[in-house]
Length: 241
Image (tube, rainbow, N blue to C red; front, side, top):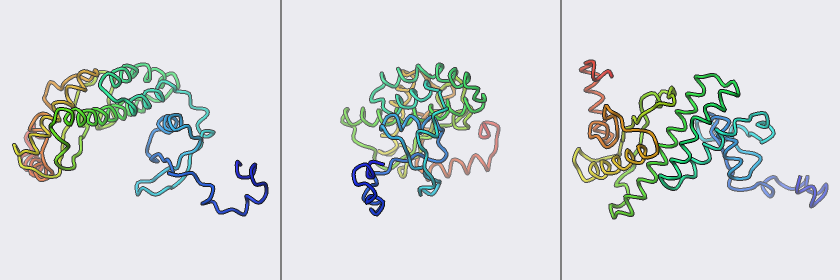
């Protein structure tokens, strides 16, 4: 429309490539719609590409598509968590979870879907806590991660079933490093900082110790393969839990 306003009918002969904005901002096809709204608001866009599981663009969503959705509290929560730069900002954002849940309930969103939203935002909270923990480690002179890693959310949140009264359930998988190696010790410190941040924000420590600062819940990919193999082979009640 802007090209037509500037060039008249001649714009119709221009290749799309000359008009497209870059980079293309996208949202996963599996993301909740309120997250698409949040991203549009933050980036001041009216359209987003939609990507499938293979990372390829499979569609587009526009602001007009989303006008009828009004759960502003959930939208604000998503954006605030995404942008939080420290534990204080995370805590302020996380304090809005009950209000967001109430807004979704008022929109007559089914309870199971509200639980899925809470779970998704707990995953976002944990990811941001990990990013802040990395910064703290660097500021303390402890360096950057020694290898690639994944910070996993377990328990009810991992199943998409989290309610408002949750605690921490997380684990760490890193690319390589034996138990009590330099890499394991780095991730142990990192996991402790993540646990402290989450507790400070309002997600308390797991009483059962299912947290990445616990050696039983962190390890290299090889360590986890052996651990799971033992659980499967032995299958006692504690392993099943």
